[in-house]
Length: 344
Image 1 (cartoon, rainbow, N blue to C red):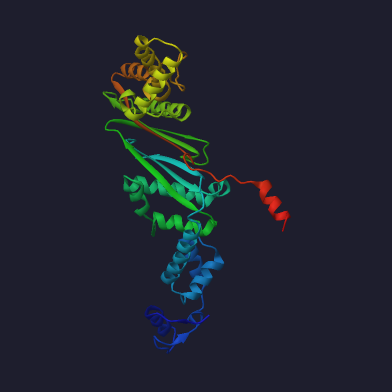
Image 2 (cartoon, one colour):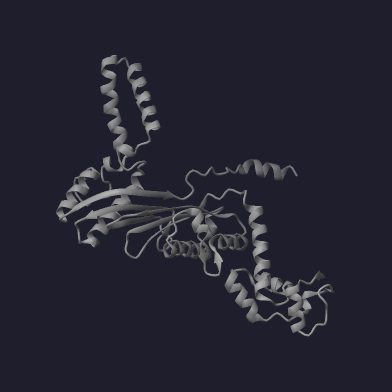
């Protein structure tokens, strides 16, 4: 296919011995024979298949930089077409800084579990996590714009869309820190180092404690508990007031409907709210991953462990990402699809 030569490609053509002017109409693929070395370099840079790399280099007259832009534009077009498709599968990755005081949890989604298990996809997720740590990004948008090798993170994700042929998104990231202590980590359904279907971070403040290896072990157990118990809040003071008032109203109405006298309603509501706290507040929950025979409430557990280590332990925050949570998945009606095909 003929195309009009850009100034850059015109200069390249002159270097190859062509006498065409910038306004001449030429077949770009005649400018230079594409070498296997150039194809290999472009493939290493983009992860794109050999045939696509060769086609891009043909179109770019052998110019590696121009060929990269050709593939990038095609990738953007491919990503735009797939952007509306539901991506509820994928992976969660957790990582932390070398001093163990900053942790990151990231979710990258794909349309199918098949793609999320692909080695290239897993490697990309791990690379994005390494980028988050090395550049100490503080938000999802900052991570998307961060430089990852020769491209930005969002460009890397776009290239993976073109390679895998389905919608892929960097959905969210959270970063938590602790002044002195450890960020505990846990990954469930682990596929690779730090990568799985569910990831948890817990910030465990350690005051006056030098045995950080022990603190790290305790923080890891606490992260495991969060994965299993799925608390909504850290403690009672962090409960959303709107939700709390709604819960109070529901409990009061239930008590009245059960025939309880009005003077006893407040007391009944207070008792039932304690059960609410025990179910949804981390520090009020019974430790499901405790190393003790009689699992204590987590707040008491940390108090006792802190004293035993000669200081004070305090859980200050946590993050729990389950892959695909909150995304409405499309349900496939296979019976209807088969019936529609049979009627054709």
